[in-house]
Each structure stands twice: as structure tokens, then as C-alpha cells.
Image 1 (cartoon, rainbow, N blue to C red):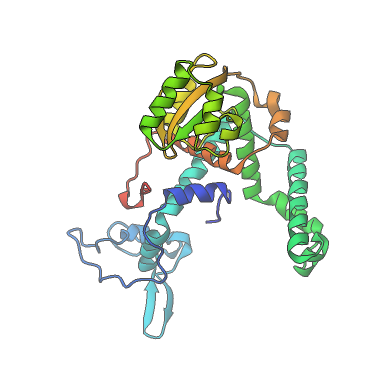
Image 2: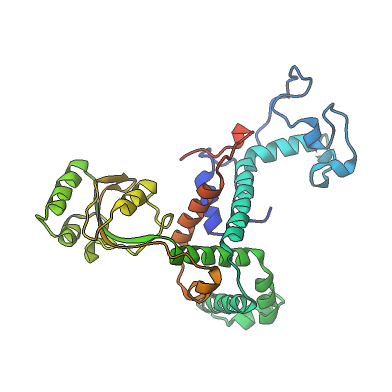
Length: 333
């Protein structure tokens, strides 16, 4: 299966993958043991290997992906279809299943949002990608893009055509469009925050801010461990649900604030103990995708924000997800 949405989806798949160490070579499997049903335990049912439920071999055209009963052989050694499939599931099963789930989530989200792009949108995006590629090639090889692709036996125009037909790029554009559309239409907040490692210290700082004994911005500049936001008094860009990497608890606390200047209780995340102050809050602004198309086309998209947004889409669309093969269920890190 071809990788789906490189970068964004790769990070999601990695987050859901097992923490088992990577296998450098196939390990020897013990001989399959007959179960009460008469088929080897731990292996795929015969029907899954191209046969029927009774274990009788089925027609060759029923084999998964057209695989023969013996997929490879050499002197005194052969790899059966069943052994191959069992090993493939063991090594890549979780990642493959998660990618299939993400594909389904993505298709449903696109349909619900009404997101789409025009031929001009695609042309503009490909032109931008070619400009980025031109700079990379110049920096790395000292060549123009034209001379670089000629060494690969192509022309720039052929590369442009290939990029326009690339499904991964098309899906990436749609994901970006859905994120910006959600940002333009859903409730959002702008907050300032400060975060420290010690809970008691956080509670003391919160009391100072809530009681008006200290300016929140000055507290953040002086005390916050967030080096990125502290110089700005802890101010963060406005966000909708699913845009931050700090989890639902952080977002719940932010959206629970009602009036500018209101300070939240202490919130714990993976970074430490946060105090939030509301700067501004916007209500939902429902409208069609077409009404915000121009904003969607020109807005800047951050890769980390896209990753967080895709996590939100997965949580939103996998209600009722059941893993009938528990060994393929993602392991929590």
C-alpha cells in the first residue's frame, strides 16, 4: 500500500505503532500446532489464504492479491502464502490497518466538509512546490531544476504533470483546506498561558493572577517555562478545538473561559502545569466552503497543526471503532 499523506500521516501512524523494537531479520516461527478446529493456531484461516472455511484450496484467483500457494522457493526452502501473510501481518499489520482507518476517516471528513480544490488551486500549489524544489536542488547540487531533472531523463514539464496527478499531494491540499475551513467557521479562542513544572508553584501563581496581585503577562515572562510564548507574555495564536498538541484537557479549559481576563484553574499536560487567561473568544460562524474558499487558498498551514487536526478527525470519525483482531490494535505510548 502506498504511503498516504507523507509527513502528517506518517507521524500519526508512528504514534499508533507498537513500541516493540524493529526486527532486523525474520525470526524462526515454531511449527504451527493444531487447534480443536483442525487448523493451525496463530495462522490465518484457510479462507483468508485463498481457500474455503473447510480448508479446501480455493481457485487461484481467490488468493489474496493473486498470491500463489508458494510465494518463493529455493534449494530445500520455500515460503508458503500462509507463512508470508502471517509474517506480513505481524510486522506491518498495525500500521496497515491504521492507514486504512485513516483513509476512511479522511474520505468521510472531506465529504462532510464539502472541501474541494480547483484546477487553478492545483496549478498554483504545484508551482509553489516546484519553486521549493528549485531552491533545494540549487542548494544541494548547485544545479537548476531543469538540469537536475534532465539527469533523471525527464523535463520540468513532465515533473509538473506527475505532481499534478499525485494523489498524496491532492489529499494534502484537501487536509489543509479542511483545517482552514474549520478555523474560519468553528468557535475559537485566543489565550495567554504560563506553564511550570511544579504544581504547588502553579497554584501560587494562579492565585496571584486571579486575585489581581500580579499582571498575567509579566508573570508569564518571568515564570513560564514555555520559551516560545514567555517573551510575549504567554500569548498564543487563536485556535479551534483540535489545533493544539496539548490535549483535550488543555482545550477544554481554554473554551470553558467566558470573559476576557478570566483565569483558568491549573491544568496538567505533558509539558507541566498550565494557567490560562482568556484574551478573546469567537462564536461559531457557519457558512459554506465556497464562501471562505479564498481565505482557505491563501492561509498558511503549519505541519504540526495539521497533525493535531488529523488526530481530531480520527477521534471524531472512529466512534464505535472495534478491533476484532486485538493484536492489531494500536498500543498506547
